[in-house]
Image (cartoon, rainbow, N blue to C red; front, side):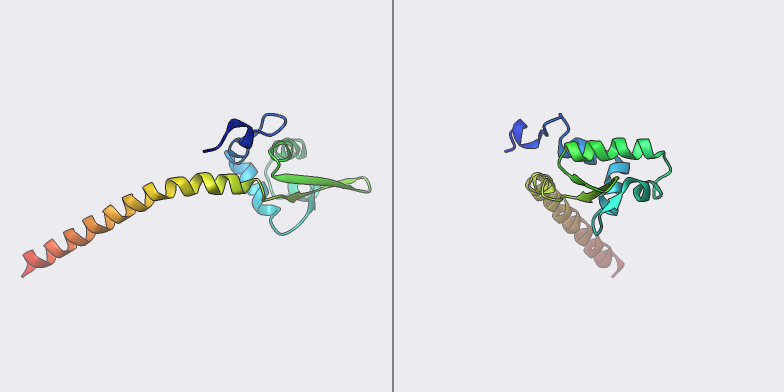
Amino acid sequence: MFGDNASKAVNGHDVFQAIADPTRRGLLRLLVDQEMPVNAISRHFPMTRTAVSKHLRILAEAGLVKDRKVGRETRYRLDADPLRELKHWLAFYERFWDNKLDALKRYVEADASEDGASAE
């Protein structure tokens, strides 16, 4: 369904690796609506600016974050296009979740109707 080349970025980080870390997912959420410099981003996380920069670099290598220079400052913004790959990958597996949820619903409803019948 997905070739290795589709998910691999130039520097070896893919979308799946990039979003595996909760800090990086937090960075993406933070950058959804606005472009921000690393100093402003760092205020939202209990780590050094250097650590935040490393996370941003991994996100950039996966294509999830774009940066641009504004004077002496580098600003970061979300590029959600690579998340489509993740969406397509998850969509394939939704049918298994849906089947399990349908089976659970049938089980619960059957159990509830049996309880109602035994109460009479």
